[in-house]
Image (cartoon, rainbow, N blue to C red; front, side, top):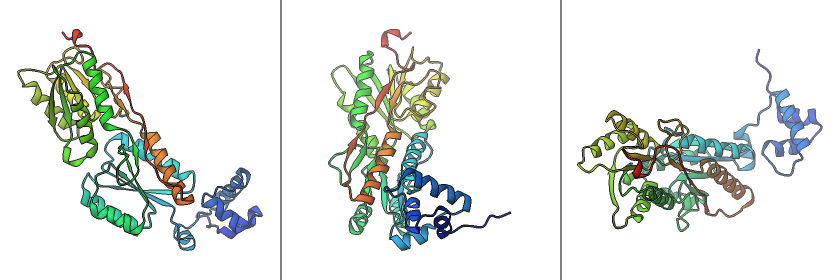
Length: 336
C-alpha cells in the first residue's frame, strides 16, 4: 500500500518547529543543533516527506547541485573519487550529477551546457585541458569550477590534485634505484590527457647518462598494455623494467609477460600508476603509485560548497601520492 506523502507544514506541526527551521535542516543549514536536526529527520521519515528540489530552487534560486564531468567510469579510481565527492556533498544537502566525456572536449562542452540547463551551480572537471568555449561559458556566467586530478598552480581555474610530473619522476627514480637502466614506458594517447603528458614529462626528467627510455603509446586499457608489451618483447634489447602510466596497462603487461613465459620480477619488473582496488591481488602483487582519490573528492566537494554557501575563495591544493612497494619490482641483480 502506498504511503501518503507528507508536506513541510506537516513536519513543522509534528516537531513543534517553524517551517523556516525545518527548511533550514532540509537545506543543510549550519545553524541547527544536532537535536533539532535529528528531530526533523525522524519526522520526515515518519511522514514520508522529501523536499521538492524544483520548488526549493524556485524559492531560493539555489539548486544545491554540483556537476562532475569525468572521462570514464571504467576504472575504479574514478568510482572511489566520485563516491567521495558525493559523500562530502550529501553532508550539507547537496546533490551530485555526473557526465562522461570519453576524453572528448566537444562532448565535455555539450555535457556542461546540458548540466547548466539542469541547474548545476558548480563544476568539477578532470585535468586542465578544456574546450575554450567551455571556459568562456563559465566566465560569462560566473560559474565556479575547479580542475581535479592535476596540480597546476598557474592554471586558469584552481587545481585540486596531485603532481603527475613529480610522481612519475619518483617512480623512475625508484626503478633506477633498483638498478634498472633500460626501461620501457607504456602510456595512453598523449593528445587525450594532460595528465598523461605531465607523467611523460616526469619520466623524461629522469633521463641521465646510461639510462635508456623507450616510450610506447597505446590504448588505455588492458588490451593496449598487452599489445604494447608484446611489441617491445620482439626487440633485440629487452628492457629490464616496464613502467606503466596506469595500472590497467600494467595488468596487460603482466598478462603478456606471462604468455611469453617470462617471470615477473625475475626477468622483467613491472610498475603501475593509480593503485586500483585490485592491484594488490595480481600475481605478483603490483608495485604502483597510490593516488589520493578519496582525499581529493572530499577537498573538491568541500571547497565548492564553502564557495557557494559562504563566498569562500576557491584555491589550489596539492595532494601527495606515494609509491606502494609490492612484489612486481626487483633489483636487476635478482634477474635470472
